[in-house]
Image (cartoon, rainbow over all chains, first blue to last red; front, side, top):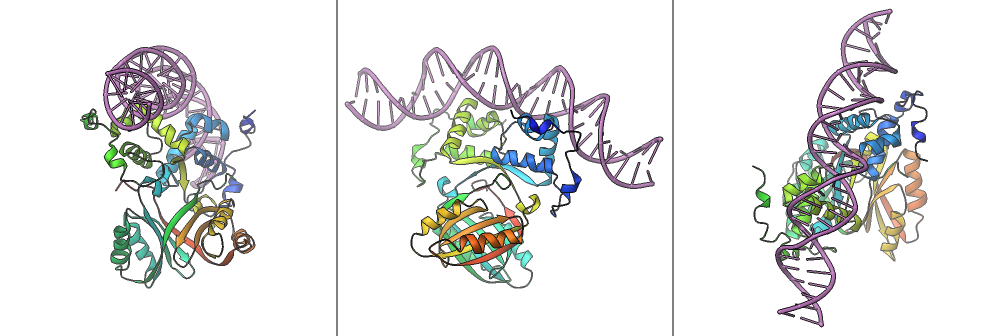
Length: 173
Length: 173
DNA sequence: ACCTGACCTTGCGGATTTCGCAGAACTGGT
DNA sequence: ACCAGTTCTGCGAAATCCGCAAGGTCAGGT
Protein backbone atom coordinates (compact mmCIF):
# COMPACT_ATOMS: atom_id res chain seq x y z
CA UNK A 1 0.00 0.00 0.00
CA UNK A 2 1.10 3.49 -0.65
CA UNK A 3 -1.63 5.82 0.42
CA UNK A 4 -0.93 6.35 4.11
CA UNK A 5 -0.07 9.97 3.54
CA UNK A 6 -3.71 10.80 2.90
CA UNK A 7 -4.78 9.56 6.28
CA UNK A 8 -4.71 12.46 8.73
CA UNK A 9 -5.75 15.28 6.51
CA UNK A 10 -7.72 17.21 9.06
CA UNK A 11 -4.71 17.13 11.37
CA UNK A 12 -3.42 20.06 9.35
CA UNK A 13 -0.79 19.60 6.74
CA UNK A 14 1.01 22.86 6.79
CA UNK A 15 2.03 22.36 10.36
CA UNK A 16 3.07 25.81 11.42
CA UNK A 17 5.03 24.51 14.38
CA UNK A 18 7.50 22.97 12.03
CA UNK A 19 7.62 25.82 9.61
CA UNK A 20 9.29 28.08 12.13
CA UNK A 21 12.18 25.65 12.37
CA UNK A 22 13.48 26.79 9.05
CA UNK A 23 15.16 30.16 8.93
CA UNK A 24 15.08 30.47 5.16
CA UNK A 25 13.54 33.39 3.34
CA UNK A 26 10.24 32.16 1.89
CA UNK A 27 8.90 29.82 4.56
CA UNK A 28 8.53 26.32 3.28
CA UNK A 29 6.10 24.06 5.05
CA UNK A 30 6.37 20.31 5.30
CA UNK A 31 4.15 19.71 2.30
CA UNK A 32 6.13 21.85 -0.08
CA UNK A 33 9.21 20.13 1.22
CA UNK A 34 7.68 16.79 0.37
CA UNK A 35 6.71 18.00 -3.07
CA UNK A 36 10.23 19.17 -3.75
CA UNK A 37 11.51 15.84 -2.60
CA UNK A 38 9.27 14.09 -5.08
CA UNK A 39 10.52 16.29 -7.88
CA UNK A 40 14.10 15.72 -6.87
CA UNK A 41 13.56 12.06 -7.56
CA UNK A 42 11.89 12.71 -10.89
CA UNK A 43 11.34 16.17 -12.25
CA UNK A 44 8.62 14.93 -14.57
CA UNK A 45 6.55 13.06 -12.06
CA UNK A 46 2.87 13.81 -12.67
CA UNK A 47 1.06 16.10 -10.26
CA UNK A 48 -1.48 13.44 -9.43
CA UNK A 49 1.23 11.03 -8.33
CA UNK A 50 2.86 13.69 -6.22
CA UNK A 51 -0.50 14.55 -4.73
CA UNK A 52 -1.06 10.97 -3.74
CA UNK A 53 2.34 10.86 -2.11
CA UNK A 54 2.04 14.06 -0.11
CA UNK A 55 -1.68 13.97 0.57
CA UNK A 56 -2.95 16.76 -1.64
CA UNK A 57 -5.17 17.05 -4.66
CA UNK A 58 -3.67 17.22 -8.09
CA UNK A 59 -4.72 20.84 -8.49
CA UNK A 60 -3.21 21.86 -5.19
CA UNK A 61 0.10 20.31 -6.07
CA UNK A 62 0.03 22.09 -9.38
CA UNK A 63 -0.53 25.43 -7.71
CA UNK A 64 2.21 24.91 -5.18
CA UNK A 65 4.70 23.76 -7.76
CA UNK A 66 3.89 26.77 -9.88
CA UNK A 67 4.42 29.06 -6.94
CA UNK A 68 7.67 27.43 -5.96
CA UNK A 69 8.82 27.90 -9.51
CA UNK A 70 7.67 31.51 -9.67
CA UNK A 71 9.24 32.34 -6.33
CA UNK A 72 12.48 30.86 -7.54
CA UNK A 73 12.62 28.45 -4.65
CA UNK A 74 13.27 25.64 -7.06
CA UNK A 75 13.69 24.99 -10.74
CA UNK A 76 13.01 21.86 -12.71
CA UNK A 77 15.78 21.25 -15.18
CA UNK A 78 17.92 18.71 -16.92
CA UNK A 79 21.39 18.40 -15.47
CA UNK A 80 24.32 16.68 -17.08
CA UNK A 81 27.98 16.12 -16.65
CA UNK A 82 29.34 19.03 -18.71
CA UNK A 83 32.31 16.92 -19.76
CA UNK A 84 29.89 14.56 -21.45
CA UNK A 85 28.20 17.39 -23.23
CA UNK A 86 31.24 18.86 -24.84
CA UNK A 87 32.57 21.29 -22.29
CA UNK A 88 36.04 19.92 -21.72
CA UNK A 89 37.44 22.47 -19.37
CA UNK A 90 36.03 23.31 -16.00
CA UNK A 91 37.57 24.82 -12.94
CA UNK A 92 36.77 26.03 -9.49
CA UNK A 93 38.29 29.41 -8.84
CA UNK A 94 38.97 30.64 -5.35
CA UNK A 95 39.01 34.40 -5.09
CA UNK A 96 40.40 36.78 -2.52
CA UNK A 97 38.81 40.15 -2.61
CA UNK A 98 38.85 43.50 -0.93
CA UNK A 99 36.10 46.07 -0.66
CA UNK A 100 32.56 45.13 -1.57
CA UNK A 101 32.79 41.38 -1.98
CA UNK A 102 29.15 41.01 -2.89
CA UNK A 103 29.59 43.35 -5.78
CA UNK A 104 32.31 41.15 -7.17
CA UNK A 105 30.10 38.14 -6.71
CA UNK A 106 27.43 39.92 -8.72
CA UNK A 107 29.88 40.64 -11.50
CA UNK A 108 30.80 36.97 -11.63
CA UNK A 109 27.15 36.05 -11.70
CA UNK A 110 26.76 38.06 -14.87
CA UNK A 111 29.34 35.99 -16.72
CA UNK A 112 27.76 33.22 -18.72
CA UNK A 113 30.73 30.91 -18.27
CA UNK A 114 30.32 31.08 -14.53
CA UNK A 115 27.87 28.49 -13.41
CA UNK A 116 28.16 28.62 -9.68
CA UNK A 117 29.04 31.45 -7.34
CA UNK A 118 29.16 31.26 -3.57
CA UNK A 119 30.50 33.59 -0.93
CA UNK A 120 32.47 31.74 1.69
CA UNK A 121 34.30 32.00 4.99
CA UNK A 122 37.87 30.73 4.97
CA UNK A 123 40.92 31.50 2.96
CA UNK A 124 38.82 32.44 -0.05
CA UNK A 125 36.07 35.01 -0.10
CA UNK A 126 34.36 33.61 -3.15
CA UNK A 127 34.30 30.31 -4.96
CA UNK A 128 33.20 30.29 -8.57
CA UNK A 129 32.81 27.38 -10.91
CA UNK A 130 33.75 28.00 -14.54
CA UNK A 131 32.58 25.96 -17.50
CA UNK A 132 34.40 26.41 -20.78
CA UNK A 133 34.88 24.69 -24.08
CA UNK A 134 38.65 24.68 -24.17
CA UNK A 135 41.82 25.88 -22.50
CA UNK A 136 41.99 29.16 -24.33
CA UNK A 137 38.53 30.04 -23.25
CA UNK A 138 39.22 29.12 -19.64
CA UNK A 139 42.44 31.08 -19.58
CA UNK A 140 40.68 34.04 -21.01
CA UNK A 141 37.92 34.00 -18.44
CA UNK A 142 40.22 33.61 -15.47
CA UNK A 143 43.05 35.90 -16.43
CA UNK A 144 41.38 38.53 -18.53
CA UNK A 145 37.97 38.81 -17.00
CA UNK A 146 37.96 37.67 -13.41
CA UNK A 147 41.34 39.05 -12.45
CA UNK A 148 40.41 42.28 -14.13
CA UNK A 149 37.52 42.90 -11.78
CA UNK A 150 38.22 45.76 -9.39
CA UNK A 151 38.64 44.45 -5.87
CA UNK A 152 39.96 41.06 -6.85
CA UNK A 153 43.19 40.66 -4.98
CA UNK A 154 44.16 37.18 -6.08
CA UNK A 155 42.77 33.96 -7.49
CA UNK A 156 43.64 30.32 -7.37
CA UNK A 157 42.34 27.81 -9.87
CA UNK A 158 41.51 24.15 -9.57
CA UNK A 159 41.05 22.57 -12.95
CA UNK A 160 38.61 19.68 -12.95
CA UNK A 161 40.04 16.33 -13.84
CA UNK A 162 37.06 14.15 -13.15
CA UNK A 163 33.59 14.70 -11.80
CA UNK A 164 32.79 11.92 -9.41
CA UNK A 165 29.46 12.85 -7.95
CA UNK A 166 26.67 15.29 -8.55
CA UNK A 167 23.44 14.88 -6.63
CA UNK A 168 20.34 16.86 -5.89
CA UNK A 169 18.73 14.74 -3.28
CA UNK A 170 18.95 16.30 0.14
CA UNK A 171 16.15 15.20 2.30
CA UNK A 172 15.81 12.01 0.32
CA UNK A 173 18.33 10.22 2.40
CA UNK B 1 5.89 30.88 -38.26
CA UNK B 2 7.89 28.64 -36.07
CA UNK B 3 8.58 25.56 -38.04
CA UNK B 4 11.80 26.40 -39.83
CA UNK B 5 13.66 23.67 -38.02
CA UNK B 6 11.72 21.06 -39.91
CA UNK B 7 12.80 22.37 -43.29
CA UNK B 8 15.87 20.48 -44.38
CA UNK B 9 15.03 17.10 -42.96
CA UNK B 10 16.56 15.06 -45.70
CA UNK B 11 19.81 16.95 -45.20
CA UNK B 12 20.41 14.56 -42.31
CA UNK B 13 19.96 15.60 -38.75
CA UNK B 14 22.54 13.57 -36.99
CA UNK B 15 25.36 15.26 -38.77
CA UNK B 16 28.24 12.90 -38.12
CA UNK B 17 30.83 15.50 -38.99
CA UNK B 18 29.90 17.45 -35.92
CA UNK B 19 29.55 14.46 -33.63
CA UNK B 20 33.22 13.72 -33.80
CA UNK B 21 33.98 17.13 -32.35
CA UNK B 22 32.99 15.95 -28.94
CA UNK B 23 35.41 13.72 -27.11
CA UNK B 24 32.94 12.62 -24.42
CA UNK B 25 32.19 9.01 -23.63
CA UNK B 26 28.72 8.34 -25.07
CA UNK B 27 28.76 10.36 -28.28
CA UNK B 28 26.14 13.04 -28.27
CA UNK B 29 25.05 14.36 -31.62
CA UNK B 30 23.77 17.84 -32.26
CA UNK B 31 20.14 16.85 -31.91
CA UNK B 32 20.51 15.30 -28.48
CA UNK B 33 22.43 18.38 -27.50
CA UNK B 34 19.54 20.52 -28.60
CA UNK B 35 17.07 18.36 -26.70
CA UNK B 36 19.11 18.67 -23.54
CA UNK B 37 19.22 22.38 -24.05
CA UNK B 38 15.45 22.51 -24.22
CA UNK B 39 15.15 20.54 -21.04
CA UNK B 40 17.67 22.75 -19.32
CA UNK B 41 15.32 25.62 -19.91
CA UNK B 42 12.31 23.70 -18.67
CA UNK B 43 12.52 20.14 -17.48
CA UNK B 44 8.80 19.66 -18.00
CA UNK B 45 8.55 20.92 -21.53
CA UNK B 46 6.30 18.60 -23.58
CA UNK B 47 7.94 16.29 -26.10
CA UNK B 48 5.97 17.77 -28.97
CA UNK B 49 7.26 21.25 -28.22
CA UNK B 50 10.81 19.96 -28.01
CA UNK B 51 10.34 18.14 -31.27
CA UNK B 52 9.21 21.29 -32.98
CA UNK B 53 12.23 23.12 -31.66
CA UNK B 54 14.84 20.57 -32.64
CA UNK B 55 13.22 19.25 -35.80
CA UNK B 56 12.15 15.81 -34.69
CA UNK B 57 8.87 14.03 -34.22
CA UNK B 58 7.32 13.75 -30.80
CA UNK B 59 7.96 10.02 -30.72
CA UNK B 60 11.61 10.42 -31.64
CA UNK B 61 12.14 12.97 -28.91
CA UNK B 62 10.48 10.68 -26.44
CA UNK B 63 12.80 7.83 -27.42
CA UNK B 64 15.90 9.97 -27.20
CA UNK B 65 15.02 11.49 -23.88
CA UNK B 66 14.37 8.07 -22.48
CA UNK B 67 17.69 6.84 -23.72
CA UNK B 68 19.57 9.83 -22.38
CA UNK B 69 17.94 9.20 -19.04
CA UNK B 70 18.68 5.49 -19.10
CA UNK B 71 22.28 6.06 -20.14
CA UNK B 72 22.68 8.49 -17.28
CA UNK B 73 23.77 11.24 -19.60
CA UNK B 74 21.28 13.58 -17.99
CA UNK B 75 18.71 13.63 -15.26
CA UNK B 76 15.62 15.75 -14.94
CA UNK B 77 15.24 16.98 -11.40
CA UNK B 78 14.21 19.84 -9.19
CA UNK B 79 17.10 21.84 -7.81
CA UNK B 80 16.92 24.34 -5.00
CA UNK B 81 19.03 26.53 -2.85
CA UNK B 82 19.63 24.19 0.10
CA UNK B 83 19.68 27.14 2.47
CA UNK B 84 16.09 27.83 1.50
CA UNK B 85 15.11 24.26 2.12
CA UNK B 86 16.38 23.99 5.64
CA UNK B 87 19.99 22.97 5.26
CA UNK B 88 21.75 25.79 6.99
CA UNK B 89 25.33 24.65 6.81
CA UNK B 90 27.21 23.96 3.64
CA UNK B 91 30.86 23.94 2.88
CA UNK B 92 33.34 23.19 0.16
CA UNK B 93 36.16 21.06 1.42
CA UNK B 94 39.51 20.97 -0.30
CA UNK B 95 41.39 17.76 0.28
CA UNK B 96 45.02 16.82 -0.09
CA UNK B 97 45.58 13.14 -0.45
CA UNK B 98 48.25 10.58 -0.94
CA UNK B 99 48.01 7.17 -2.51
CA UNK B 100 44.97 6.22 -4.50
CA UNK B 101 43.12 9.50 -4.78
CA UNK B 102 40.26 8.03 -6.74
CA UNK B 103 39.58 5.60 -3.96
CA UNK B 104 39.17 8.47 -1.55
CA UNK B 105 36.87 10.20 -3.97
CA UNK B 106 34.77 7.07 -4.08
CA UNK B 107 34.56 6.99 -0.31
CA UNK B 108 33.35 10.58 -0.32
CA UNK B 109 30.82 9.72 -2.97
CA UNK B 110 29.30 7.18 -0.65
CA UNK B 111 28.57 9.76 2.02
CA UNK B 112 25.04 11.11 1.77
CA UNK B 113 26.01 14.54 3.06
CA UNK B 114 28.44 14.93 0.21
CA UNK B 115 26.67 16.31 -2.76
CA UNK B 116 29.47 17.07 -5.13
CA UNK B 117 32.85 15.44 -5.60
CA UNK B 118 35.43 16.39 -8.17
CA UNK B 119 39.06 15.50 -8.63
CA UNK B 120 41.17 18.51 -9.46
CA UNK B 121 44.58 19.73 -10.43
CA UNK B 122 46.05 22.43 -8.23
CA UNK B 123 46.73 22.73 -4.56
CA UNK B 124 43.87 20.39 -3.74
CA UNK B 125 43.44 16.91 -5.10
CA UNK B 126 39.74 16.74 -4.41
CA UNK B 127 36.97 19.25 -3.86
CA UNK B 128 33.84 18.06 -2.10
CA UNK B 129 30.71 19.98 -1.31
CA UNK B 130 29.03 19.13 1.97
CA UNK B 131 25.40 19.82 2.84
CA UNK B 132 24.35 19.59 6.47
CA UNK B 133 21.58 20.65 8.76
CA UNK B 134 23.68 22.32 11.44
CA UNK B 135 27.18 23.03 12.68
CA UNK B 136 27.50 19.88 14.72
CA UNK B 137 26.65 17.77 11.75
CA UNK B 138 29.10 19.60 9.53
CA UNK B 139 31.87 19.36 12.08
CA UNK B 140 31.21 15.68 12.46
CA UNK B 141 31.39 15.00 8.75
CA UNK B 142 34.57 16.95 8.20
CA UNK B 143 36.56 16.02 11.26
CA UNK B 144 35.35 12.57 12.09
CA UNK B 145 34.54 11.12 8.74
CA UNK B 146 36.51 12.81 6.02
CA UNK B 147 39.73 13.29 7.93
CA UNK B 148 39.50 9.74 9.10
CA UNK B 149 39.74 8.36 5.60
CA UNK B 150 43.06 6.66 4.96
CA UNK B 151 45.16 8.67 2.55
CA UNK B 152 43.72 12.03 3.48
CA UNK B 153 46.68 14.21 4.30
CA UNK B 154 44.90 17.46 5.07
CA UNK B 155 41.69 19.36 4.46
CA UNK B 156 40.64 22.95 4.24
CA UNK B 157 37.04 24.07 4.62
CA UNK B 158 35.12 26.94 3.12
CA UNK B 159 31.82 27.45 4.84
CA UNK B 160 29.14 28.87 2.60
CA UNK B 161 27.82 32.26 3.55
CA UNK B 162 25.65 32.96 0.58
CA UNK B 163 24.84 31.20 -2.67
CA UNK B 164 24.79 33.76 -5.42
CA UNK B 165 24.32 31.75 -8.56
CA UNK B 166 23.43 28.27 -9.59
CA UNK B 167 22.74 27.57 -13.24
CA UNK B 168 22.40 24.61 -15.52
CA UNK B 169 22.36 26.33 -18.85
CA UNK B 170 25.53 25.77 -20.75
CA UNK B 171 24.94 25.91 -24.42
CA UNK B 172 21.97 28.15 -23.88
CA UNK B 173 24.03 31.28 -24.00
C1' DA C 1 24.24 -6.01 -54.32
C1' DC C 2 22.21 -7.55 -50.40
C1' DC C 3 21.35 -7.77 -45.67
C1' DT C 4 21.21 -6.07 -41.02
C1' DG C 5 20.84 -2.87 -37.43
C1' DA C 6 19.95 1.69 -35.88
C1' DC C 7 17.07 5.42 -36.06
C1' DC C 8 13.34 8.25 -37.70
C1' DT C 9 8.41 9.13 -39.33
C1' DT C 10 3.66 8.85 -39.53
C1' DG C 11 -0.45 7.47 -37.68
C1' DC C 12 -3.41 5.76 -34.27
C1' DG C 13 -6.19 5.04 -30.03
C1' DG C 14 -6.57 4.87 -25.19
C1' DA C 15 -4.95 6.14 -20.79
C1' DT C 16 -3.17 9.85 -18.32
C1' DT C 17 -2.07 14.45 -17.43
C1' DT C 18 -2.55 19.19 -17.68
C1' DC C 19 -5.17 23.31 -17.22
C1' DG C 20 -8.63 26.69 -16.05
C1' DC C 21 -12.37 27.75 -13.23
C1' DA C 22 -16.02 27.88 -9.69
C1' DG C 23 -17.15 26.86 -5.19
C1' DA C 24 -15.87 25.34 -0.45
C1' DA C 25 -12.66 25.56 3.51
C1' DC C 26 -9.34 27.51 6.38
C1' DT C 27 -6.47 31.59 8.35
C1' DG C 28 -5.57 35.83 10.25
C1' DG C 29 -6.95 40.34 11.34
C1' DT C 30 -10.39 43.73 13.00
C1' DA D 1 -18.62 37.51 14.03
C1' DC D 2 -17.30 39.03 9.75
C1' DC D 3 -14.31 39.82 5.90
C1' DA D 4 -10.44 39.38 2.81
C1' DG D 5 -6.89 36.59 1.20
C1' DT D 6 -5.13 32.29 0.38
C1' DT D 7 -5.37 27.39 -0.35
C1' DC D 8 -7.73 23.28 -1.49
C1' DT D 9 -11.14 20.46 -3.97
C1' DG D 10 -13.87 18.90 -7.80
C1' DC D 11 -14.80 18.89 -12.54
C1' DG D 12 -14.97 18.98 -17.46
C1' DA D 13 -12.20 20.03 -21.81
C1' DA D 14 -7.99 20.07 -24.08
C1' DA D 15 -3.44 18.44 -24.50
C1' DT D 16 0.01 15.16 -23.59
C1' DC D 17 1.93 10.79 -22.92
C1' DC D 18 2.76 6.14 -24.29
C1' DG D 19 2.93 1.92 -26.73
C1' DC D 20 2.64 -0.07 -31.10
C1' DA D 21 2.74 -1.03 -35.96
C1' DA D 22 4.14 -0.26 -40.74
C1' DG D 23 7.28 1.70 -43.54
C1' DG D 24 11.61 4.72 -45.07
C1' DT D 25 16.48 5.91 -45.01
C1' DC D 26 21.15 5.39 -44.20
C1' DA D 27 25.73 3.27 -42.87
C1' DG D 28 28.46 -0.72 -42.34
C1' DG D 29 29.62 -5.35 -43.15
C1' DT D 30 29.77 -9.55 -46.10
